[in-house]
Length: 371
Image (cartoon, rainbow, N blue to C red):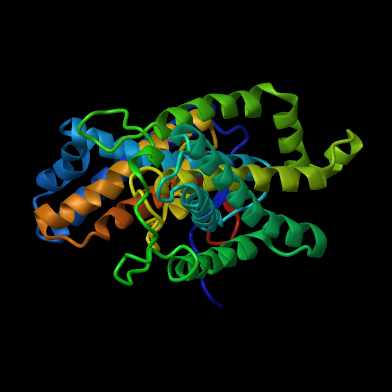
């Protein structure tokens, strides 16, 4: 007979609320500690490695601007995902919704960006942002429809739609939106300067979308925690029976959560094509939609917390690129740090909700916990 593992998990009577909020900080500290160990195993100076990640990424105005720039798509996607997860809707397809939002936004800009145009730049940027929101919502609506009508698993549907979105952007940059003067490269034309988001910080690429992101953080904080609609959404997702008893439509929670999430991801895509990229490219996102899942949980599904998580993930993105050029490490080292952060966060959360107990030889749990 196979031996059972000597440790088991037992639910805590009352999980510590302060520890729940301290969990991301503890997970970050563990990530940095094991990151230093990883540098040692790779034959690199751990102090130099951590300096690249923690200090060189924000050493001057330009570097700080790059960190804040990457927080825009990460936080926007995380805001929508936080709403979904609070409603118990597991949207994994923010990446695809971001891509489709970028396609819609680029199409809106290219409609007006023709020789001799007289279109107002601010108006076109507004229309492009709205087009991005609509594109992301339409892509998320496919998941909502299949979940609502056919009880399809939203995790699988939203994830598979991401790969369809990646093929869709390859089609449009090689077809309808391809730059005829682009020497056959798969890309749209570069947008005119008046159709690009204005810079906020001289000497950097940080654009006005960052201010929009901060405003939406405030809006979503009020919506989730101070509005009846946000309360109804969470009840409809987490307790459908109670929602029906109270007259809250559970189906509405599904649609509302996915449409909000898709809209935020689509807006992130719109800001990417009208911001740092300045055109539509197949590489519109290095995985922002997937990384935003970590951002949402590091931020404890709170809009303000998502800003903290977005900054950390942005530093890991840029730190990985700098480690490649300065330390000779693969750029994937940034993804390793992101994965470690998620792993340690899940471990910390598990031990906040449960305690470790030794299993006795007879199989009964011993009264005293090991942690």
